[in-house]
Length: 255
Image 1 (cartoon, helix red, strand yellow):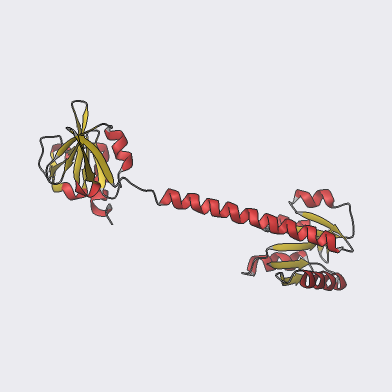
Image 2 (cartoon, rainbow, N blue to C red):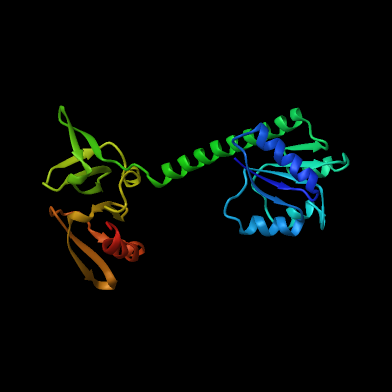
């Protein structure tokens, strides 16, 4: 762990650094600063951000609270001071502990453990957040449908599907080889299960796979009509409101 010391008294700097190094071999002093200005510049320009900061209240060019007004601090802060009248202000800036000089071993241990716990909690939250983001960005789409056909259960991989359509209140799946199956879910449900890079809902009544499109033709009124494979008597016009999105998908959807 990296610790930053902000203290304007040389003797106090040395004492705290010596106590940290002797007590905690895993803690490395990444910097010792003595002023508000030096601290702001260091935090803005140093790539190695500290895991904890020991911060004296009264520095050579002002009080440490000025630092918080000029820069955001993302790690636990331990206030170190000879005065007890800054405690309320210290906790207003979310410091994890308030140590009075001279610092005793027990007080230092308590403060360091609080920093460790805060960092552990942050790491857990970051892992949970990353997991949520990964889950959201790697959505698993439907790979296979199990369909009833007479007295059988038929498995149809999405790679075999040419298109879906609704007709007379029913939803149908058409395979690339020409088999048609009645489904027990609506087209609205199906549209949410499919990989949008491979399937496009051209209208309220039809979802097509990119591999099923044989021909794209313009009709009156800038309407677009598709010829699908296998051929079908269903309405294969692209809705006017979807035309621009469909053309963009056709060009880039499976890239």
